[in-house]
Amino acid sequence: MSTGEVKKIEEPLIFHTYPLCKYSDMKEEMKQEAMEICVTATEKYTDNHELAARNIKDNLDKRFGGPFHVVIGESYACAVTYQAKSLLYMYNAGNIAILVWRTVSTF
Image (cartoon, rainbow, N blue to C red; front, side, top):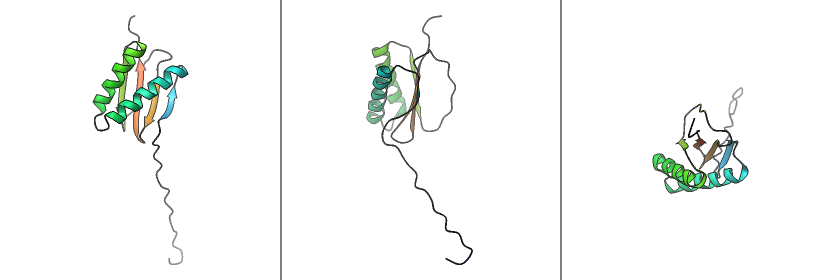
């Protein structure tokens, strides 16, 4: 290294391999069950987010009543209107984001 040269230290990227809940207003029991359903589906369908989302939706609709909506992806932004106490935003397997929410079924 010559004089005046600065050595740049690059920090390694950190990938979380465990489920990471970023935000949820669900009750704790419901949140834990929903996270387990999401992890199971994304591990089962690692290459197909559409099938994973369908699996999560169907399981949540059966378990907690519908209508639930699910978005799975690696790079997206969104704004949703949802029923209170029914939103879950989490990451699994590092960079796979999962957004789950329920809308009002009747007006």
